[in-house]
Image 1: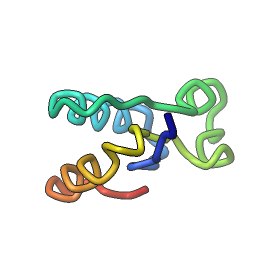
Image 2: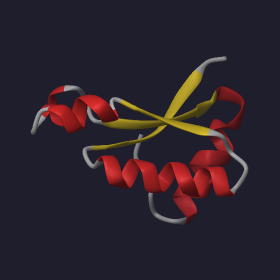
Image 3: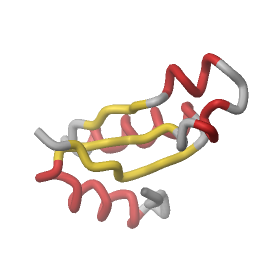
Image 4: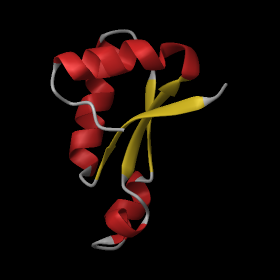
Length: 74
C-alpha cells in the first residue's frame, strides 16, 4: 500500500487533529515524523514537517475533505 501525504504542517497537534477528522470520515490516516518534531525544538522544520498520510486509493477523498475545511496543504 502506497501512502500519499495530504497535509504537511510543523505542528504535531494540528496533524493529529486532521488525522482524527479523516478517521471520523472513515478515511484511515497516519501521522509521520511526529516523534522527530517533538524530540528536538525546531527539528520539524529540518525534517520537512509532520505529515498526515492516507492510502493512495483514498487520497482524493481526503484532499477533498480537507479542502472543504480549508486544511489542504500537502
